[in-house]
Amino acid sequence: MNGVGIFGGTFNPVHIGHLRSCIELRETLGLTAIHLIPSARPPHREAPVVSAEHRLTMLHLAIDEEPGLQVDDRELRRDGLSYTIDTLQELRGELGNDTSLSMCIGMDSLVNLASWHRWQSLTDFAHLVVVARPGWQVPDTGPVANWLDDKLVSDVELLTNTPAGQVLVSEMTLLPMSSTGIRKKLAAGQSVRYLVPDAVLDYIEQHRLY
Ligand code: ATP
Image 1 (spheres, protein in one colour):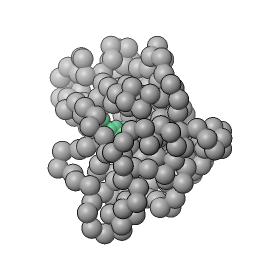
Image 2: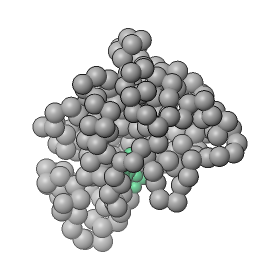
Image 3: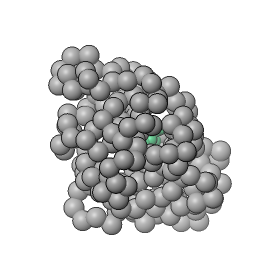
Image 4: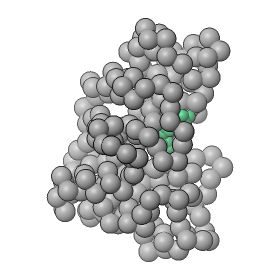
């Protein structure tokens, strides 16, 4: 095992789709650890209503017993907007220049990558592992397509054997669920058992979230 993965999100709340993706990412790339990084104030989206503290606690409840998955709260501790590039730069500084670092993003994010702060520099610090999302294709024209031209690879070993710089489109399972769907069910008084870990469900009920 070698290398570190990054899985960011709002985790509002964390669900088993996130957890399965992290486990598959870790196994496919043979990574030592995946950092699950809850975002504080995502630049692209409205601030979540449920506090960062609750989202962080639910993430701990979901993964603290799972070897190889770890909560990384650096974006919650940082002031100002949470830019991914800053997180990657920081982690690269901690890991040194040789360790393979791979960040998981959805295909929807890849398609909109040009709206991210200093997007062209993301691969200076990490690889990107792009997960298919229904209705989204790898861009084949425009700035992101041009940028991808010399970065797209299909061989996983190219990611594990180098520190950064490649983009891999992954076949990872995407379980048919979202935090939005879970929040809607809860708001409608429906059960979300088995969509989130039991400890997360207990926490949601105890604190009457959503
Ligand atoms: P929301 O519905 O609030 O937008 P979400 O379920 O999409 O939330 P996020 O916290 O925004 O979850 O996403 C974090 C990461 O998890 C993103 O990389 C996203 O692509 C991925 N992801 C979201 N849903 C799933 C799923 N069902 N299976 C695997 N990965 C998922």
